[in-house]
Image (cartoon, rainbow, N blue to C red; front, side):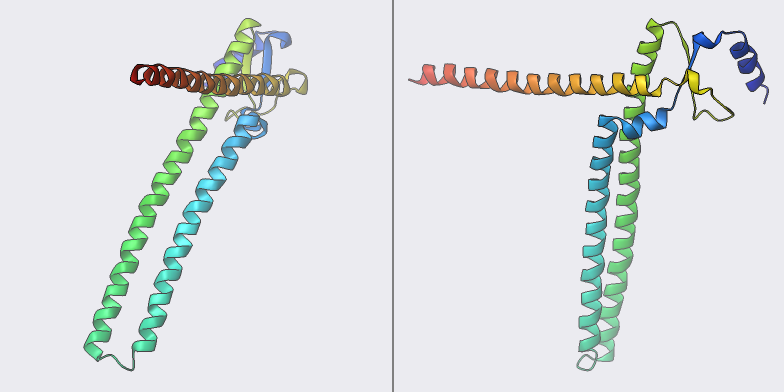
Amino acid sequence: MFLLVPAVVFAAGLSAAEIVSIDSLAIMQKSAEGQALAEKIKKEITSFQDDVQTAQKDLADKRDALSKQAKVLSEEAMQEKQTELTQKSKKLEREFADKEEALRSKLQKWQVALREKQLKIVDKLFAEKDCSVIDKNTPGLLRVAKSTDKTEEVLVAVNDAYKADKVTVKTDKATTKVAKSDSTKKSSLKVA
């Protein structure tokens, strides 16, 4: 609570024109890059879930096969097969728990990287205008005036930066392909 008081006193000393607010979560969700990341995350989760379902189906099929063989197997052989299935089931649970943890970590890294990238754009945009920026999602912030909300302006800047990055990446790839084809021509000239 002690930290909130100086922030409120500081904010009260600034004029309304010097303080702007943004909604960083809305920017992440609505931005083109945020939507592309959401799609990438969805694919990763779907792939993981498909792997889990395939493993569960395989295990269920093996249990069904074992139950059908119960009449022809000796009690000792049946016990051995059940033990193997139980061990395999536990091993799969551990493997998928580890994979799920790794997936969560990877997804979180992607989200944090996107947030940091977008906040750098916010900082640059409003540093040029010499404004203080408040994120609507800041804990302890009760209310932000709609007149100070610059989320849409930031969204445009973030999307423009993303488009510029995509063009640069495509240009870099095209330049690389041209350079490779040039080096191939040179090497083919040497051989001939």
